[in-house]
Image (cartoon, rainbow, N blue to C red; front, side, top):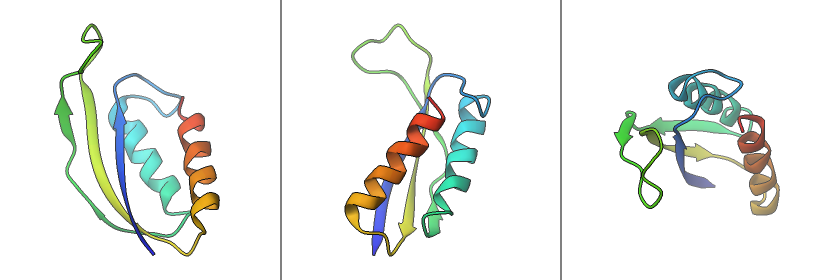
Length: 83
């Protein structure tokens, strides 16, 4: 089942800079299936609470056989891992 995912970071994490965080998160996604495409990284200004660093965003396509509830749990685990 193909899944579209949005990724973003604007603060350092245990993986390092926001770029290093997105790189590490993409490696973690490989454990959930096959990442078939990744956009380039985009810098975007914060919205709402604007007094924070610029965001680094990307999108990825993941081909997985995981059930939706299991996939959600694993994605939330990855998010928690990086703070």
